Structures are given as structure tokens and as C-alpha cells.
Length: 308
Image (cartoon, rainbow, N blue to C red; front, top):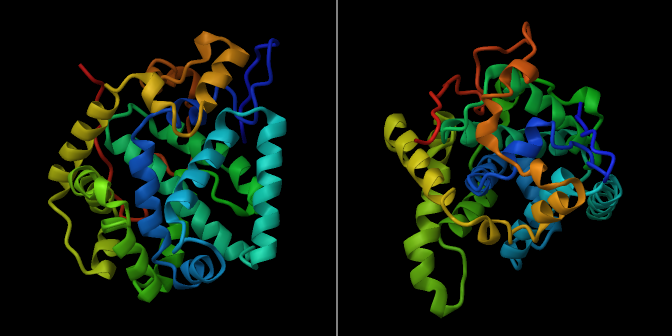
């Protein structure tokens, strides 16, 4: 499960600087992973029907995206109290809206974790198979906070892959999925921001879509570029995003990482590329699923590289 830090000067929260989650969730490519997750989540007709019928996605999609990002930031970098309180609020909302079915929550969770893991690995983060397993295991803590029994949630990449294999026959691109697709391709913005949407957002959304597993492309009915081209584009985009100053990147979600560093010390700064040096500590041999990246069940692995 989650790994906590040992700094006595502050509360490390549910994960702490010693976790894979702490290191990965500070990388800007997570935003692309989040958009991929929306595309994937929308392919479960029952899950997306509940979202569209019982939430404000249509009228406040941007707000929903930002609130989700802030929730992930609070769970990752907030104090234990803040994370537990955020989880309690989400569970209450789920109950009030009638979207607390464990099967649907599990789909949303798995699609999100799979997307984060797939995108960070494919973009060049040097994550070993054992570290990927550990990330999936750590995220069972996040699953608990949204109302799932951690023991019923995949705990490594092998279990995650088998979950997607089981659920694959239930997936379809129905009217609600098409509505999500339309929004992601051309979200409503003020007229002054239309040029930025066309120049920046469309490319981000197209890249997130391109990283989906082949069966998702088939369901949506739009082809993706060749896998090698997608990996090249994703790596180049991720490296460009990583060049942005932290003070800009960490504004969204609002100051979760700076506040965690203020609480625990500057040496707790998230550094995804440091995971290669930590592999000997974090790896646990013999974990089921070694040799398989968590990738929505398409069985594809991608070579990673360090920037240089």
C-alpha cells in the first residue's frame, strides 16, 4: 500500500516522498494522462451514463477537470487530514448522486491509473516493472478514498491487465462517449481563447487520444498514427513541458507541491527521473506482471529514456 516518509518535521501524507506516486504525480505529462483517462473512462456505457446524468460535466467540464486534478494533488501531496477529508467529500458526493456503484468506481479508477502509468512510461520516465507494480499497489489507497475496498482493486500491473481483459467486452462508444469526445476535441471557450484552443488544446487532446490502446481507437472509429510516431510526439511534448519553470507548472493544481516541500523540506521535491537511481531500493523481484506495462490491455511496452 502507500509508503510514508520519515521526516519528523511534518506530515508526509498518505504516500510520502519515498513513494513512486510522489515522484510521478509531479510530472507535467500527467495532464496528458488525465485526458487519456477521460477518453478511456467514457467507453464504459454505464459509467459515463452516470457521470453525464448526475454531474455537471456538460455545463462545467473545465471545472470538473480542475477539481479532479486538485483532488489528485491533495491525495498525493496534502497532509493525511486533508487527503482523508477530500476523500470523505468525494464519497458523499458519490452517494448523493447515486454514482457509488463499486463496479463503476473500479472502472474509473483503473482507467485513470492505467492512463497515468502508460503515459509517464511512454514519455520517457525510467520506471522499472517493479516500480510500476508498486505504483499500482500504492494507488489502492486512492481507491479506498473514493469508496472502494482496496482488496478488490488490482495491486500490480498484471492484475490491472487482466482487469481490462475482463471488462473489454462491456466497452462501447455510445452517445455519451461521443459527447465526451466532442468536448475534448473542441471544448467551449471564450472567443478570445479560440486561437489558443486550436493551436494548443487540440494537439494535446489528439496526442492523448493517440496513446489509447488499439481497441479504443476501433470503438471511437478514428485511427491513430503509427505507434512509433505517437511515442516520439509524446516524448518530445513531455520534454518540452518539463522545460517550463516549476513556479508555472505547479500553479495547477494550486500549490500542492510547494506546500508539501514547505512542510517536509526542499529535498522532498518530486523528481521522476530519480527513480532510476532508486530502482535497487524500490524494486521487489518476483512480482506478478513483470514484463508488462499497464496499458489498457493492449500488451504494448515502450522503451524509456532519460533526457540528455
